[in-house]
Structure formats: C-alpha cells, structure tokens
Image (cartoon, rainbow, N blue to C red; front, side, top):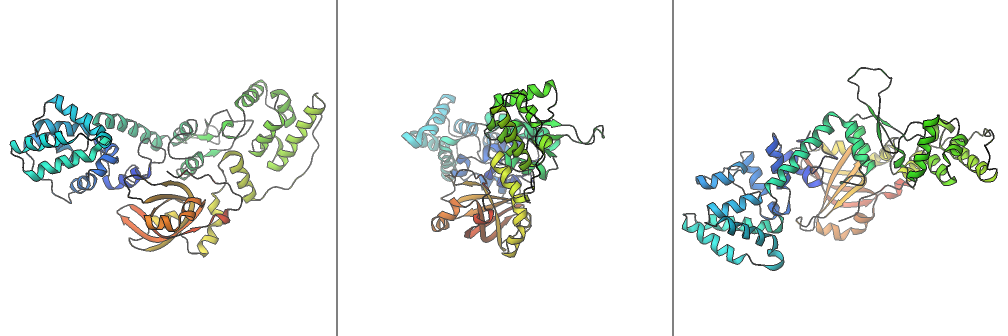
Length: 470
C-alpha cells in the first residue's frame, strides 16, 4: 500500500512530495520508513542527497568504497548523509572534531542562513579530513552536503519517532479503514485533505458511508454495524457521519437533540423541534443537510416540515398540531449534490465529475485512472477539481497541482513560465483542464502542463472547496 503511495490521510507520508517519493524508494522495512521521513526535506533535497541515495539503493549507481570509520556512519544510508546525527558523527570521525565542536557545528548549521558563521567550521573540517587521509574532493563534497542541510537537517531520532506513527497510521488505514476514517473526520481540521477528499478516498477503498440523520447520528462520526445485523464477523463496519459535519449547526443544539432522542425516538419534525428546543435556524440547517429525511422525506419535503414546525413553535408556543401533508417534487441529482456541498462540504452521492464525464470525454479529457496507465511522453488531457496547489521553496518556481475526479487523483506539474502566462486559470479555477505531456518514472506519473483551461463554468453553482495556494 505504501509503495503504491496509497497514503491519503497517513501521518507524514500523505503530502504530494512524499507520495511521489514512496514508489521510488519502495520501503520494505521499518528503517526504510525512517529514511523516507527524513529524505523528503529541504536539507537532503538542497544538499543533493536524494537522487544519489535512490540510485545507490536500487543498484543503479555503485556505492563508493568507504573507510571503516566512514562506513560506520554512512553505511546504513548507502554512503549518503541523510540525518543530522550523521553530519555530526562525520565531523568527529573524519574531521577530528570533538563531540562539543560537532554540537557547535550543528548549532551553526541551524543559523548560518541568517547569520553566516560556517566558515571556521569549513576550514577546520576540510583540514582535519585531509590530515586523516581523505582527498580534497571527498572533503569538499562532505562539506557541501553539510551546508545543504542548512537549518533543515532532520534528526534520525525524530525520523524514527515519526516513522513509528507512519507505520501505525498505515496499518490502521489498511486493516481498519472505517475506524481510520472516523478518527480523521473527528480530528478536523488537520492534514492535507478536506473531509470531502477523505470520504472519496474511503469510498474508493470500499468503506460504506452513511448520511447524517437525526435518528442515527451522534455529534461526531461513529462506526455503524454492517447491514444486515448479525452478518459474518469479517464484514467491516460502516461510517455514520456526525451532526458536527453540518456547517453552522451549534453543538449545544445537537446535544439537546441527542438528549431528546435518548428519551424516545422522535415521531415527527415538530416533535423533535419541541422536545429539543430547536430554533428555526437549527431546523433549516438539519433539513438542508438531509438529516430530517427519516422523519419528513426528501430534502424539499423536510424543509417544508421544518418551516411548518418552526412557525407553530414561534406563534403558538404550544404542542404542535399534526403537520399538513404537502407533496413536493424531489430535486434532481445535480441539485441534491449542490445542496450537499452547501450544507456539509461533501456529498455521499456520486462524484460531481461523474455527471460531467460525457462532456469531458467529448473534449478528450481522460480520467485520473486512465492517466495513471498512460505511457511516458504521451500527450494527454486531464481534468478535475483542484484540491491542492503547492509551490515548494525547493522547486525553483514550479507549482504542483492535484486534481480529483471520480476515479482518483491526478498530479500536475506547472513550470514557472506557464505559471506566469496562465496565472488566472491556475489560481482561480475550481475545475481545471490540463493539456500536457505524461512524465512517467515507474509507478510515479505526472502530467507536465503545456496549457491550462478553466472549466469551472461546468460546475454551475457547485461550491467545491479548494486548498489555499502556498
């Protein structure tokens, strides 16, 4: 799972950069996860350590012979210093530093970009390495790597602690995906992914999702038993979404609702409103989210019942009379989808792009799953909802964009010139079309953009949430 970068929601290895690294590194044991955590950091990237390590790990580049004292430090990382401790150990065994001087070097590394101050250490380290028989090129390369660490050197001890959480998170996602999703939803806001993206990923992994209802939901998301009750023990539980997912619903109102439900199940919207002391706004929010469906039917019917109950409570201040039966037309699938996004920020219906797939296909836009199977250097078009835009400081102005459709995620690379030429589409589009060329390295697939197209008008009023650009 990890080698395939199937890590949405997994601690530390869910970012775009980590997902691109995982299929390249292909972790096979716990220490590989320790290296993975530390490798995708500005220090190793700026110090030119990433590609040499990967080439040596996979036998594409020979590991240079090392003297025993150097091998003791760098042997476990294929001769490439990755961790802060390794830099300090190298200063001791290769440069003749005392442990105290090595710690001073560590402190200087953390501050040199702001204050300078590495020059004395450079002279001492290179001189010490030459005195111990290391050639000039080796000494200069080691110091260049130290300088590349700058203030971003990652301690091995921290990486090991993080890697343990990586493993636990990945194990939970793999073996208990419903519980894993519940935990993520109940810990929002966090991580790289919105609840909508987490729900889409969980659905692709076979997790059954159940909607918010006033009869069944708690405040937070919970695990529901599988249907039908009493099925085989290996049938996984479902996830029942919580009342907290309804945008704007006060927790106090939800707690009164739950208290009333514990006394007895509500018989009608008016009964629930009376006993839980729900306001007109509370009822409207519940109706808009579809949470009154079990009491009043579809969303439009529920909105009518909610308004009727609110009027009775406001004007009569007595136990409500029987509700009038009014038959309203059901909303279309697109209207239901829009209402879902407005009320909760996600939908448990079909993905929005499912409704647009025929129109996108007519314009030769392929799905994310088709892009994943495309050949290297193939010209292709992809389109999806923009879920993430990133411009890392180590990427020389390149912007990385993640698009989501009904089949998964597509990774887009936008080079600086195109960023400036099509800035409006890049930063403003909710639904983005990309014309470009496939760049494949093993299982890692990117679409290098040549042209961007803002397709947001196809979404109509659908208020899809996009991650802020940073």
